[in-house]
Length: 104
Length: 104
DNA sequence: TGTATATTTCGGTATATGGCGAAATACCGA
DNA sequence: TCGGTATTTCGCCATATACCGAAATATACA
Image (cartoon, rainbow over all chains, first blue to last red):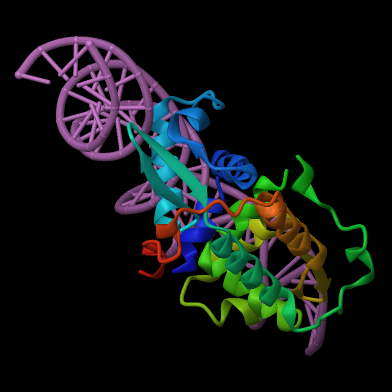
């Protein structure tokens, strides 16, 4: 389900990986080199991203090249927009400047 | 940060809550009534959604009415789109019909 | 075939998460 | 102020997740 997609997107390292791949495909090693975690940990993140369909891997000799699968990201966007979809502006006055612990 | 937003979105129950709120604001009780989990569990989900800024609560007498905060959902959409942003179509041939364990 | 390189898989650990019921809190109406 | 309704907060437990280093696998090349 697309639940796997949202779960995959929940981790900041995985979003960072997607961000890199959004700029161009890269090998597992090149990606891993940009993060403080061990290669095995990053490999685990690849597995989650693959399982969600967010990335695709392609072997090039000794190395594995990862590519982003844009359509799946776009599907997630569509789901989010559909949440908001049915117009409901009925926010109370306080909602304008509502407490956004968000930025912590 | 917006990490809280993506984590909040990772849970299917919370997305379902947002889906309901997208159609109109509801009281905590009315929402809880639509899920199999206990009221306290659903309340926990509200706390996560609030902390992410995805919803806002307003007291109306004995009850708490929850409202969706559309702008935060839209911010998340923007982040996702920015991941894909920088055009990179360089998918290998196999990517077309790539294995999407997604739909399990 | 044997060695080096790239990457994943495995086993383990610590922490986070989602679930529950019971108790606490907030508000209403008598 | 007291009892009732609505909702959250508080332990508590089970499972999931992120992380690591070591071992296994895959490919290249001499």
